[in-house]
Length: 230
Ligand SMILES: [Zn+2]
Image: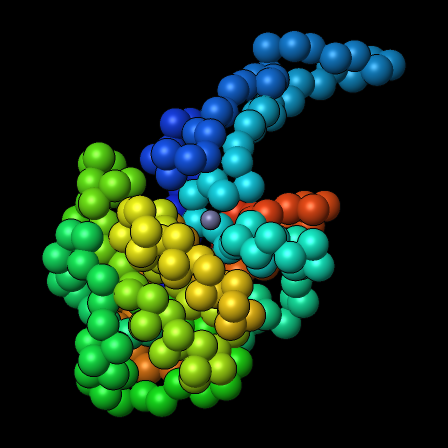
């Protein structure tokens, strides 16, 4: 068995979507404070982290994009949704701000040699992380899915899909439409994934990426991984 890590590092001032606050990491304790109990001295090191529930590699909860008062928060989404079979579609290289079409999705699926099964997680590789991470384009000029492509995924009865960008579709109206389509079709998505290039051509794998149990959370950072049984 081997595992491919699909998660970005959570670090101070990590690139964040403009509509969410950035990650702030500070030192809470650094072994400089000596505590004593009996004859024993002890020091420790720990950090304090302030972050959005949409920080770095994360999964959106329905309550984020669906104004329905019954829409699930992240602590209410079944854990089975975060441990599924998965495939990766290769749409790289995608031009900046491009909206991938249904024809492009179908061509990528055919090229993968796989089928999409009900309940699958589908990763969308567009070459964004390796090309744009750390640049202004990473949070503004990234490509993504057309709203028709989101519906195409929902038609295949997927559980969720994942992208490398900070949003599932290009900035502005395409992004709003993609989120509304997820609400309408009862699916969700992960954002800010990396290493999807390492999944291309590898066929079917096991996805795992459990959210933190944030009460009422609108999303959660996840440690997204692809598991291959050798
Ligand atoms: Zn999000």
